[in-house]
Length: 68
Image (cartoon, rainbow, N blue to C red; front, side):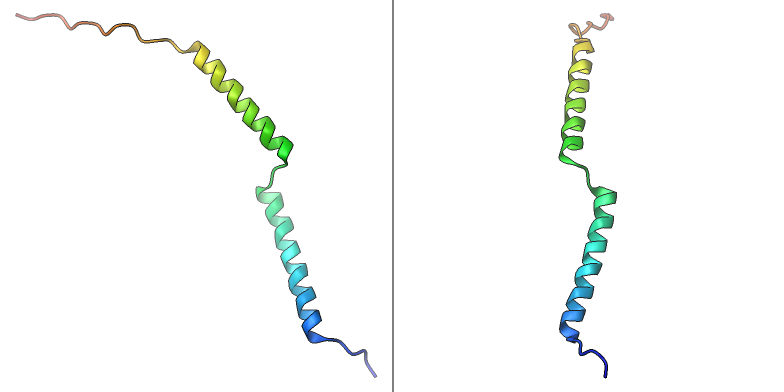
């Protein structure tokens, strides 16, 4: 005689394994480690500061020549 299986437990185990597989795929596609997020944020901040330091301030607006 074969082994008796609880179908409810089998179904739940199968769904749990499928969910874990989907989660692993999502982590590969979308996930970044905390260190990667921090490094990206710091790099972005340093680039912003560098660009702001090179920005030229506009001088006073030039008066259009008077016609008349």
